[in-house]
View 1 (tube, helix red, strand yellow):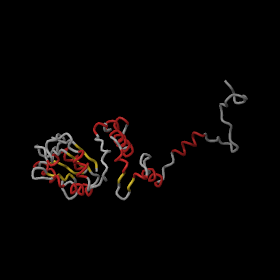
View 2 (view 1 turned 180 degrees about the horizontal axis):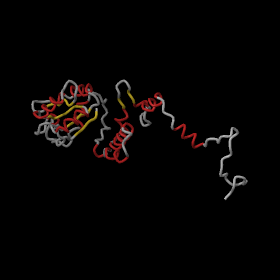
View 3 (view 1 turned 180 degrees about the vertical axis):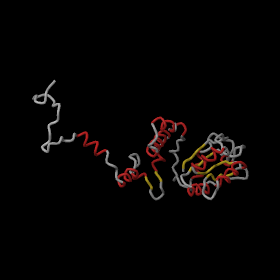
View 4 (view 1 turned 45 degrees about the vertical axis):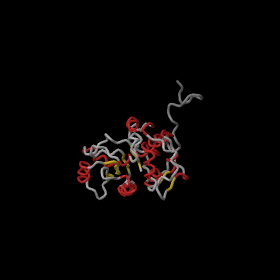
Length: 233
């Protein structure tokens, strides 16, 4: 063991600083810096920082669209959803994130759709990709509704009630006497009214927000049993 006077050994005691007090170690200084509270401005910048996998050319800020999604195949979309889930639910453990991850086999590849992905072209998009597991013998299979009430074959999920209302109007052409376009969002529609509507209506397409859809599923008045397609708009 070397003592403090050894030419090659590591001192057992730190040499005192000129002021007589020991100089703080590098590790301690680093801990002090790390422990400083993050400013509100820095926290806001951190929250609003654009993800690395989204380029400026792909973003349409006016319409709130990321056009890069149109060019993603099933696997890329599954990875994209996993990245967004990790970013916006950063309090979840790795095991919880894995449980929420969508398999690529659950996502239809729509990269061949060349028209603009807007409300005007939504019916054309649905006709091309939705209802692939339904009977191909029926020309207007999207207008057909399952026999059981409250079981739409297609769900369109939006982030807000106003957006859901716009989407409902866009797909109104698929409504018929036997099949109803269900409004599954809270704007101007009470939960009790939505429950009664699900009890007595045959639905072919449901348009709504995540919270209201989950409330109806939890209440037991709407079922997944006939759902073949889910779209996020």
